[in-house]
Length: 127
Image 1 (cartoon, one colour):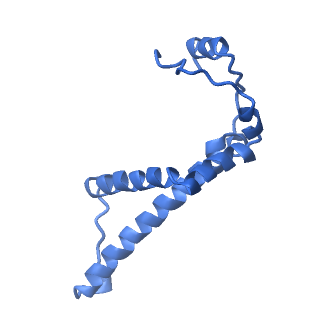
Image 2: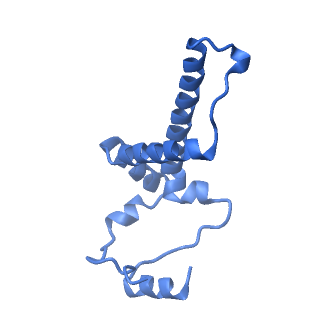
């Protein structure tokens, strides 16, 4: 964290703590809830892509040992971008927002947020 960021936090009366290494899975809200849900969604979408590619080739008459799924970056990159948009859209739903809030709750900081006055304007917009 840079000195400028620390200064902006202090000017905005925002307290912060550094989370010790190897404890983010307990105290970082996104690690506690969002990242797990995101990874699970991406994994399911990838598995669906792979399964559909194999099925398509088998139904077209290919022998199982001849099936090849295109895993080149040029193929997966646009698919991954679409999957990320799906993840984003999921977190815009009420269920997604509940997952996010649950991360703050499980990290033990949701209650602190309820009593915090946030600045009207983003204090970091100039950084």
